[in-house]
Length: 517
Image 1: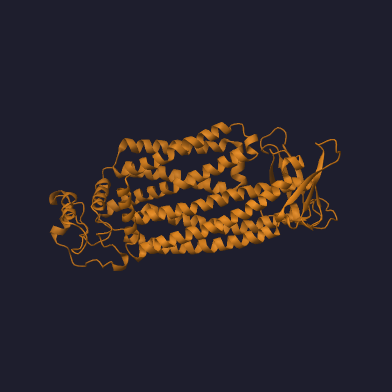
Image 2: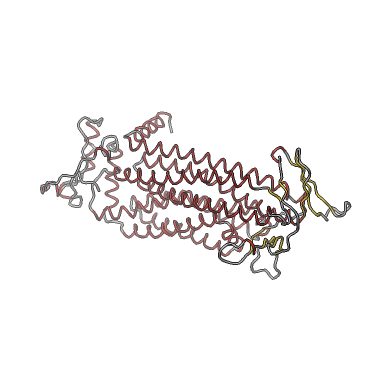
C-alpha cells in the first residue's frame, strides 16, 4: 500500500471517529479502558510472576529431588469446601483410568498436627538462598528438605513434605500468569474491534464488544471470589500452625492481588454499563438505507453470524494457545503420548481460521453458494476436531482442573456451533434480496455518502414523517439524500443513478426515505 493511500485511509478513519460526539466518546472510552485495565492486569502479572519465581526456587528438582513430571490436585468431599477434610495429592500420571493409582498423599487436614508454630519468611525480595538437606551427605538422592536463608533473618528449614505441598501453589501461579497475559491481550483486541466498529459502522463489531465486556465482567466477579478461596486453601495446607510447612508466605500476595482484582472489577462493571449505553446509541445511528422487514430479518442473522466470527477470532485462538502452553511447559508434556497430534491440530486450526472467517463474510454478502458450502464444511471440521480432543485424558484433566481454560473452550465451541447454525440459516435465505440490499449499502459507502454525507447523528435525528406517502414514493426504492451544503461533488451525486434501481423494477423497497431500518 502506497503512502498516499495509507494517508487517505487514516484521514477517513479519523473523520469517522470524530464524526460526532457519540463516536468520539465511544473511541475515547475504549482507549482509556484498554490501557487502564491493561495496566491493572500487568500489575497482576507482575505479582503472580514474582511469587511463582519464589516458590519455584524452593521446590525445583535440583533442591528437592521432586520430579518435574508431577501434577497436584486437591481432593475432598463434593459440594461446599470443607477445609478440615482436604487432601493434597501428587501424581506422576493422570489419576484416572490407570491400572495402578499414580498418586501419593502429601497433605491431609485430618492428620495429627505437630506443635510447630508458624514462621514468617522475611526479606526474600532482596534475595534468597536455598540449600538441600540430605540424610546421608554421600547419597544425593536422599533429600529430606531444604533450608531457606534470607538477608537479616535466621535460616528456615522445610521438610520434604512441605516442599511437596508447595508444588501445588507453584502450579497455580503458573496458570495465573497465563490468565494475566490473555486478559492483557483481550483489552487491546477490544480496542481494535471497537475502532473498527466506528470506522466501518459495523454492527457485528459492536455486538462483539458488548458480549466480550459481559464475559470479562463475569470473570472479574469470579476472580475476586477465587482469590479468597485460594487464600483459605493456602492457609489450611501451608500457613496454619502444626502443618508440615507452618510457613507464612502468601499473606502479602493475597492482599495485593485482592486490591488489584477489586479495582479491575470496578473498571469492568463501569466499562460494561458505559459500553451498553454507548453501543445502543451507536447502533441506532447505523442507518443508511431503508429496507423492508423481510430483508431486515435476514440481515439480522447475517449480523449475528459476523458477530460470532469476530468473537471466534480471539476466543478460539486464546483457548488453543492456553492449551498448547500447558502441553509444552508443564508436566503434561511428559505425560501426554499424543502431543504431536495436538500440536498438528493447533497449527491447522490457526492456518484455517482467518481464511475461514473471510470466507463466511464474503460468501453470504455475495451469495456465493460454493464458498458458503466450503465455509460450513471447514466450520464442521474445526468443531469436530476440538470435540474429539475431549477423548484425550490429559485434555479432559486440564479442562476440569483449570476453569479459565474451560471457559474459553466452552465459549469457542458455542461460537462454532452458533456459526454453523446461523450459516445454514443464511444459506437458506440466498436469493431473497439480501445481496442486492448489501450491494446498495456498499455502493453508497464507496461513494462517500456514509457517514460523511449522510447525517445519521443520533443527537440530530429528526422524527419520521407521519403524513401518508404518495404512490410514487411507495413504488420507488428510496435512500437518504445528502444535504445541499455537504461536501459531495456533482459526480458523486450522479453515482446514485447507478445505485437507484429503475422505477418499474423496484417494488421491494417501499419504506419512506426518512424511516430508519
